[in-house]
Each structure stands twice: as structure tokens, then as C-alpha cells.
Amino acid sequence: MTKKILHITLFSLVLINTAYAQFIDIQITIEPELSATVVNDFNFGQLAANSGEVLIELGSPSMGVFSISGFKNQRVYLDVDYPEALIHQDPLVNGKIPLTINLAANNTGEDDYRSSFPIDGKNTLINIHASSEVSPSENSQNIWEVMYVYVYGSLNIGNIPNGTYLGDIYLSVVYD
Image (cartoon, rainbow, N blue to C red; front, top):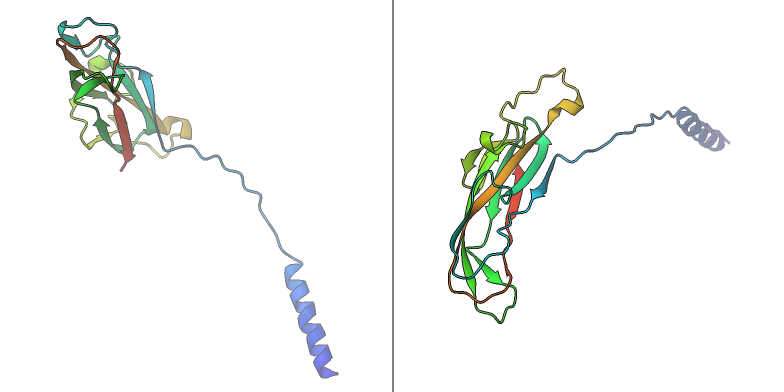
């Protein structure tokens, strides 16, 4: 009998403890810390064989542009990988066009090549924004910034078969 009362009492205590549970409903929005987008393709257009050196300068409408968005005070490593030469789209055609790439970055928040500075693109560490200080009173809209990476350079077109020549430029962005 004492054993039954003890079991009933313990069971009642367990029910009493769980009867007073409380909860809070939480809702949050998660935004990506970092994103990169192609703003403008790097494009030499249509050229003729034996054209010699063809140059796309910094500021040309044909230069490539990447935008990188992230926290204003975030530092990122930029690594740009590109081929030494463009190759013919037909693998049976033996033709290559030597490619020289130059890079510049602008971390003022404006897409303006005139405010850019040269970078080598080999694991380059850079702040997303030139002024990386964020005051505690700033709201979440003001902590995001955009920086721009500009791709420009030259081709040297010799006596090559006609056709389309291709190459890919890859931008890797890793935050610190």
C-alpha cells in the first residue's frame, strides 16, 4: 500500500512539473554574409586573324565587372583564376590566343573605375569597404556594402584559324 501511494505521488509530481511549460515564438531572417555577381562580361567582341594586340583598358565598356556584397567591416580574400590563352571552341581545331589580364578593385561602395586600385588577384586580402568602421547605432541596412572588381587586359591575335575562342575567368571570394 505504501508502495502504491509512493508511485502515485511521484507520478503526480511529474505531471505537475510538466503542466507549467512555457514557450516563446521566435522568427528571424538570415541574410547571406557574402555574394558575388557578374555585372558586365569581359568581351573582346568580333576580331580578325592577324589583328595583333587588342586592348581593353580600365574603364572600357567591354571590361569585365564583378560586384561583391558583404558586411561593411568584412575583409575578404580575392582569388582570380583565368587561362593563359583562349582556345578554339572546336577541340579539333588547334588554335590559341594569348591572354593578359589586369585587375583593379574599388571598395568605396560606388561602381566607378576611376576610384579603383590595382590588385594581383592571387589571394588578395581587402576590406569590403574602405571605411570599415560600423557604429553600434547603425541599423542592419547600413552595415551592408558593395565593392567592385574590374577585369581588363589584352589579346595578341596572330595567324589563327577562324572561329570562336573561349576562356573562363573565375572569381573566388572567401571572407576572413
